Each structure stands twice: as C-alpha cells, then as structure tokens.
Image (cartoon, rainbow, N blue to C red; front, top):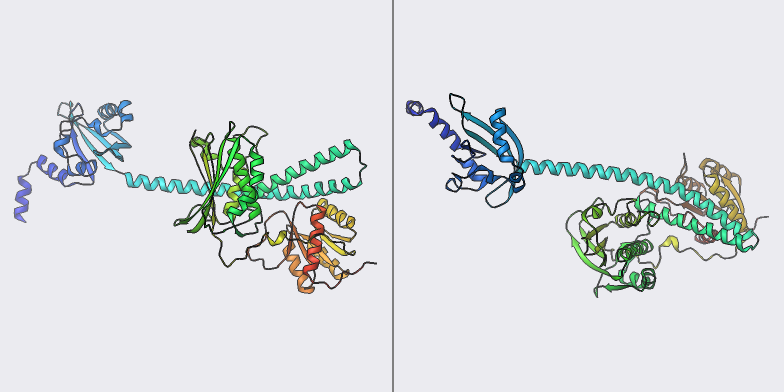
Length: 526
C-alpha cells in the first residue's frame, strides 16, 4: 500500500491524466492543436476509428467527417463554436479508416493557457451506432404499427361502405331487372335501361375491390393449378392487352397447386396484366411465370414460414421510381389520371393474397419494367380440388311448384326487391325486418324456405339460422350477404348468396337449398 501511495505521489498531474486516458477504450479521447491537428491518440480512438497513432498524429481531425460535412464546413464551425461558446456538442455520422460510417456523439472543449489564449482542444467521441440502430428499429416498428392500425381502420371503413353500397346495388339492379321485363320495347328506353344496368355492374365490381382490399370478401379456398388457370383465361388476357403486347408464359413441369380462390385469383391476375399493359403504351412483352419456393421468415401480417407458390407478372414497361413504388399498393393511389383508375387494383390483389395466407411483392425500377409477385401457400394434398367453389355450384333453375318463402332483411330497399323477385318467380313471399319477427312468422306460418341477411342488429342472420334449426332442423336456409363478416367459429352449413344478386341467382339458390334439404316434394300453396 505504501508503495502504491509513493508511486501515486510521484506522478505529476499530467502523468495521472495520461494514465487515465490510456486506460479508456469506450471513448475516443484525443487532443487537437489550435488548427485542429491531432496531437494525441488513445486506445479508444484506435479501437473504433481504426487508425494507429502513427497514422493519425499530425493529421487534421476533419478526416473523420463525411464528405458532405467537410463540404459544408462543419469541422471548422465545430472548433469555432467550442472557442466562442466554451463547448461544441453534437451527434452525427463519422467515417472509420475502412470507409464505414458510425454514429458518433462528440464533445469538443477548448484548452486555454493562464492568459486565456486557446492552446488546443480536447475532443471526446463515443460510438453510438448500436443505440441509434436500436432506436431506428423501434421507430420503424412504431411506424409499421401505426400504418397497420391506419390500414385496419381504413379497411373497416371501406368494408362497411362496401357492405352498405352492396345493399343499395342489390335494390337498384334487382329493380332494373324487374323493369326490364315490364317496360315496352322502346329502343330509347331499353338503351337507357341497359346503360343503368351497366353502371350498376361497374359499381358492383368496385365494391368487390373494396371488399377485397378490406379483407372482408368471402373466398372459397381450394387447390388451384396455376398453369391451368392461366391457360384458361389466356385468350381473355390477350384480347384485353391488344395486339401490340405479347404475352408469354413460363411454368415448370412440376408445380404444386396453390391454396386460393380461383375466381378471385383470375381477377387479380387480370388486374396485374392490365397494369402492365398501361405501363407499356408503345407495346412490349408481359411474362406470366410461376415457381415453388420455401419461405423461412414471416412476411407481412398474415403469412408464415412454409412452402409457397409464386405467380409473377413481369413487364418491360416504364417502371416506377422509388416514391411511386412505395405508394403503389396504397388504397386509392393511382398514376392513371382522373377517371381512369380507382386506385384499388393493387390493394385488391394484396387483399386476396393475404386472405389466402400469402402476400404481394412489387419490384420495379424506372425504365426497367415491373415485377408483381403473388405468393400463395401450397395446398395440402388431402384437400379436395373442386372445379368450382361449392357455394357457386348452385343448381340450374328448374321449374318448381310455388313455395312459401320468408325473406328477412333489415334494409327495406333490399327486402322489397327480394320480395318482388320471389313473387315474380311464382312463390308466395313473406317478409320480416328482424330476426325476432322472422322467428314469430316461422312459428305461425308453414314456411318452406328462409332467406336471411347476415348483418342485422340484435340478431344476425347466422344467429337466426341457428335458432330456426334448433326448432326446425330440416328447414332450408339461405344466407344472403355481400360481406365476409361470418365469425371464424361459425359451424352452421348454410348456402351463401352473394349480394348484389339477380333473379336467376336467387332462383338457383332456392332450387339448390331445397334439393340440399332433401325435401320429398315441393308442397303446393293453395
């Protein structure tokens, strides 16, 4: 102990400072002369800046700054600030010997002689790269969460609007169909009527895109052979893009089926091909290809690691800059000009991919074309592979004896329209505006079939169906909806009828529901 005390007392203040500085490895501590030349170099500076003392002593400290900071005069301003304000403190990018950048926290203090003259500067630098990266990762996570919440809220809003819009379209299109049968065959009146019907169908297509974007569209997931699907609509695709554009396909000899909705995937593919066409006003080549791949990481919010099939559409068009590419899949964003696009196309494709358990990837560079990839999970070999989703396999309408059918809907426009269709088909139609009213009618009347809306207050269509089946287990039921709001735990097997629907759709649903119920004979209403 006495030896230590004698050693400590024998050291000058400068010696003790030097030992302290030499022991520090987490900070770069070094001295500068009044002009900014490095005059000392500690182990901490050597550790994270990469220079040996022999390489840096006598050099100007500005060599640690980026070219942008040197060009702006930041090193000289730092010394000037330290001299006038008594300290310079900042954070910024600095450059290591190997050229890599690190995020530095810097303090520069002036050193003055007894007369107050600056004789140099003491500079302390700390490497905060890990902290900055962690902070940026946290900010990215927060931004991703914010965007996810924003998109979820927008999706709920869009889905709700689409649901209400579907109800309106159901009434409009149904009424137009009734008028089509009754108005005189005046060419002008027929033309106006057909124009209204065409506008209604465009509105229905728009609601389907909105529902797909909001993930509220019902998908009939089944194994789909991508080469066969593309081959089946190849003529449609070629007619849609015109003679100036060549469509090529590339598929491996062996490709497992993807788990998705075939009809919706066709719409998604057509949408991507139309986008590719619009990006090639002078013509070009669109290549549709597919491949199988293993994904070992989670991508997006719904996909999981596993085996996927990638269906890609590659064009030789104009491509997108980084800003456009970033916003391309945003809802209602379009580069096609006013009146030429809804901005929901890619959002719809993205929604279909995610509802199928996959995701959409866009890659593009300005002037080098665009690649749009739909990644879909591989279908389980044990799953059935129907030609069409079961819901769409409705029987061809056949002549039936009049039935007593109860229509249930809280929207009076839709209810009136459904009643008119049923009566036009020759059935006796009863109406109810709520689940409770429907239950009372079923108890009082000899009802052959119930058609109910799903989204109703107090009692949903699914709840009504369960209540009816508990008392009348053989009662045929049809659930009419334009919105995939059925809960995941729904276990009641119901025939689904998508809104908006035409009379032929309703007739097919009625026939299928009766046949499924195995009713020996249709009773005749007196």
